[in-house]
Image (tube, rainbow, N blue to C red; front, side, top):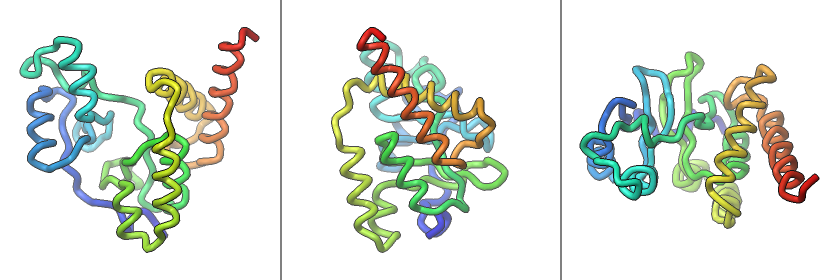
Length: 188
């Protein structure tokens, strides 16, 4: 099944120059916990309610003055609409994420595929269950995982891969970064 068959299209987005208050209000209005951050039609990141709380409010930043770009997550993993659901599921599992932006061939955001989309629209409860099991596993440290994911994403792109394509290469880059992290912790 192709992602374009199950993606939630036309998601609410926010500009990187918008304020945190506006982001929070859009989340409330749309009853969502995250928003794609787009500069025009180009996806530049994601902002979550947790980003606002932890990187914004907990750091004593004024939600009326702080810009989305200051607390958003950049380097977001994504897939393309013509990819198979199984590829997106593998990526969601590997990165322990519940939502994945979906781009068209022009690299413009067309939607979001979520764990809920997989469960309801894919007609394959097994895939949704597998993703849920993987994303629910505890992580050693969210900061450490984000750093590893960013290094893997950079390594992946350095080898000429396009985000969302060559999934095996992405997963191998992720594993290599985890292996190096474990060796550095062990003092090798």
